[in-house]
Image 1 (cartoon, helix red, strand yellow):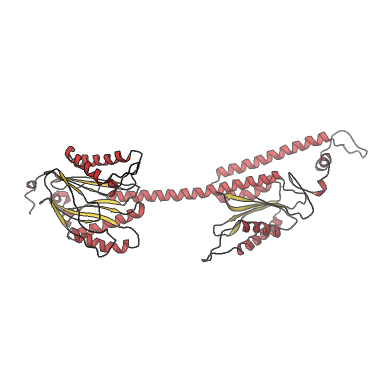
Image 2 (cartoon, one colour; image 1 turned 120 degrees about the horizontal axis):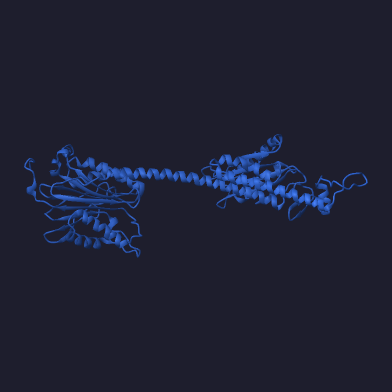
Length: 513
């Protein structure tokens, strides 16, 4: 807070500010007589004028002070009401110089705000005398230009924000251009401990003094101004957040619609699947893709149940909107590639080459396990691009094996080669596709659920659960039990459960081999 007393004549400082020299040693009763014009109704001096008694003068002074106090309280109450009521910051700022001058009985006030780029702008100005107001405006604008032009700039030519020394220079320049006959006081507008502007109040009355009470009132108005500025910025940030939240909701809704709404009916197997995102928009995905156009056209008559189907699970490195966008792009490209009828390894190779240019500068990559199931032969063909290998529980031997092939992440190397593999499934076999959200899930001690726990839980589920949905629920529950109900999963978790049910003889005769 900076007080800038301008009268150059000698003055004595008291606890209430600057007092004119003529009043410094005057007895209190004489001061009261000089300041009051009210006379007692009775009593007369030799000239016939009513005589003023010290007691009466004191009572009148107390009454005047009470009136002034009520006036100030009313003004500050009105300012507080405006702060609570106004939604427009500019409307509130209009009141600030007026209120500051009214509560201090001064001739005017000026509000200067500092911009993030270091510029100083005269935001609002109020003067009792409109003719004098033009001179005040010109003086303030000249002072701000002087200070702004002297500020250093960055290499890009941007002005550096005002430093404390620059603000002190601003006070000095304002005092200089207003002139020596103006009584001036300036104080800071502080928002989150950062000075965002200055509030100046001034008077041309040579008897005017900046008492401690007046300075406190100006600071109080400045504090109200700071609250209004901070509230406005918080409102802007809240609106931005609301827009972002709405965009995330739209993104989550779109992503949810891109995931399969239900598992397809494929002859001889039963499916269950779930994708549980850590954020509203995630990077995990799974898909069931008909392997030919004929299957897409013939879904209504049910004949597509005997066609080949692609079962896919993938994970984009990272979470949130960027991962969700890449997931959406990957899904679209993969669906187009599947219809070309290539082998799983060739499909991954083509997908990698197409996506490499898009992922090269994003620092994000995609892991993907692609498989094709033929209901007629129960043959599962697959290829892996660094995704967690699915686990196959073989009913005949009651053992679990991992389905894996060599292959790097999608988008890491344009010339990566992928490999094909096949497995013959039998009745009762159960297969789970999963993302690393399962194995990386950690408890409060930092221990991970890991693949060993998942394998053990899967083994138990295959022997005690009657259908894929029950297996899926059991595995999700086991992870939740391990991490604790209070711990939110830090990564997306996706699981597909596939179980072979019926015999090949169930194939309808209308479908040719």
